[in-house]
Length: 449
Image (tube, rainbow, N blue to C red; front, side, top):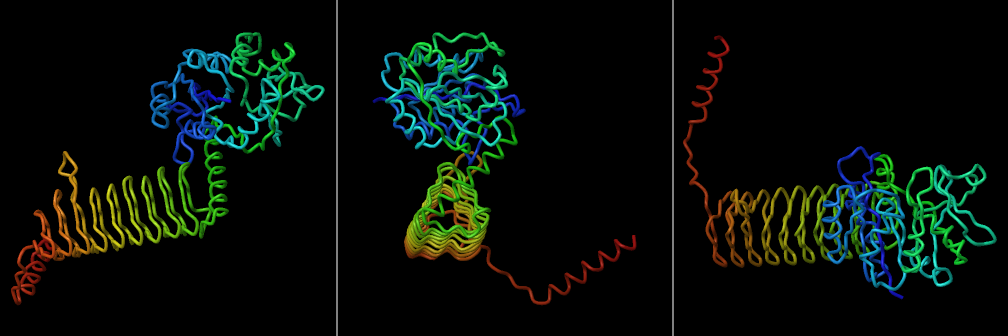
């Protein structure tokens, strides 16, 4: 059976007190929308439709940046969740299969739960995801009679007896696409909010004798994000789950509570992650690598046997081959370090290719930016770059070459050559004493004045 997913991302999120659309606030380095799209992608859907409204251009750019094949439709007026899903009708014209409705501000629905809903859909035209929270509060309630879901009632429209029901509505729905859109066509806005509730399809389905089913998930999956406080709670919940999964998968976290992972962080078995390490988006750490404490990594790849840190920064485009060593206070950006390269400390390598076995001395800088454009530095195999070398790109250093400490290299260095580019040292015996005496006299005169 084909699957399509509609993700509702039209809300302004006024309680966030932000100019940014609610769907684009970040958890684990990624917009909330991307969390929902990740869950959707796990179903290998034929189509993903994102319903945007507030900040539609920003939401569209974010959605297409994650999945260029997604389609974004606009809900110009926010008239409720039923109205929002209906905006996807044209985009799904001719689609035959199951339709899953997700919410950008409910980022933690697991793929396993969605697959359970799709499986339950084989016996029911409509399946709703429910949960039993510790505090039902103002959630909509699922009304079940004779082992079937007969309606969903919003809290503001519920009677006291209905508010006492412990089973609540998550908002997530799965159903046959044609049936869902047919039911949506019958929704009215005769309720306390004057909106078209998607939840009304359950009562309409029951009245037509179609019946609806329920799949129940843990409350943690249904955590919604409507405020900054809830955003912080979502971050904490994601990190706790991601750390636990990493440990379960054979990753050593020496101080788990201090490590922060991104939505797409991949760490191999037997990797070791020290304390206070932060992973931005797009990081892969292979098995057996070690990231020492206080490192920040983003958009990079660290191969087996490599070690990084402490206090190192890997920026987007950093590619570290096997057994590379990147030490303390080193920054690597958009550079490829081949097998066995050593960059010990206090160094910036940007826009560079470094050959295997090369040693980069302390204080080395690849001067990659001329104020307008970036330029690349190329260093060969088994070269030795002396401490405090400035490599002014574009420039290359050949295999087995050496640069003298303190050199400013502006021209290519041939293989196996030595390049020294610094002023000749001048020594003047006794001058230091005379100079200090003069300076002290000037200071004394100024103090008296």
